[in-house]
Image (cartoon, rainbow, N blue to C red):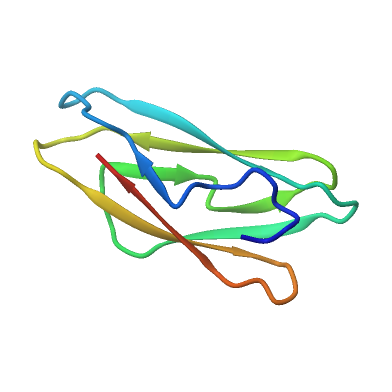
Length: 102
């Protein structure tokens, strides 16, 4: 992960057991510790209709935090795994992949 993002998205996010039709909401936070804003983009690598992350794109202001939200409301029983890729507008940033499962 980029050294300027001190609090970042974990590689694996376990939502645990969620009852059918009940919405689970989690927060993800990125922290910018430098005096320059950076853009981010989160791309779903596989589609899970019952799961969203918002916002998928944005700017993390200088010396500030950006909160993103995971919303999951299962419409059927089972185990799921959604994969995402995070890109930052930093020079030489290597895309970071993470998974959400439950």
